[in-house]
Image (cartoon, rainbow, N blue to C red):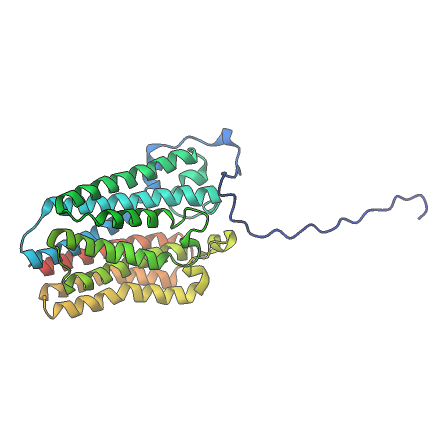
Length: 326
């Protein structure tokens, strides 16, 4: 009608694509006035202590294999190997909290408290704690190097710390491109186990290699359970973990293989070390984890599977160590 102002049609805006966030600045999604400061409980939760027992597995197996060779327990070196392993495990957990937090990846994550994403502390504080644990690992590693005079271990230690950082840190973190499991297998399985054996025995028996593969597979299983829990959020923010790339069903099969294959290795070792048959008792813990992964309805249920898999790993390592030294 004449005199009626015509309504302007609004042009549709550009379609918003999922963003990985600004890696240089934490996004403010909440009013900071309503955010309570982090407590000691929050810091402990951010360390993800549920995963720390994984650090014991390669040291147990590696030490048992070393005793096979030298028939002597170098407890001081073994203790420092454990310090390196635990410090790296906690350090990488805080580093992931920092790196994923500043990218916005952890904004709606299920599981332990994320300090950076919750805005309860400044990102720099979380980074400093991660660096502190990396420094502890470096100092303990240097002590081992001086004691054994194996100076090339300094380079190995440096590579381990870099691998821990670039899992989710840097401009192109390999954890965002489906390579997390590969690096976990190499560093938390092969390098950690074989390194523990070498610094105590200056040799790498085949038992250490078999044990290292078992430890690496179980460490990967924990990561797979974690990534399956976070698959929907990771898809939204563009984090292309292996789980995101292959989907839920293939991930369930992968998890099952990663959990059960170490027991096949233990059965082979049991032919020569009969106590290794006792590792089959750990299936009482491992099989419920597999069942949860296949039947879960809510992502939070996978937190239980993650804990059971971690317990499976350390119990597996303890029985193999006993088999080697028994």
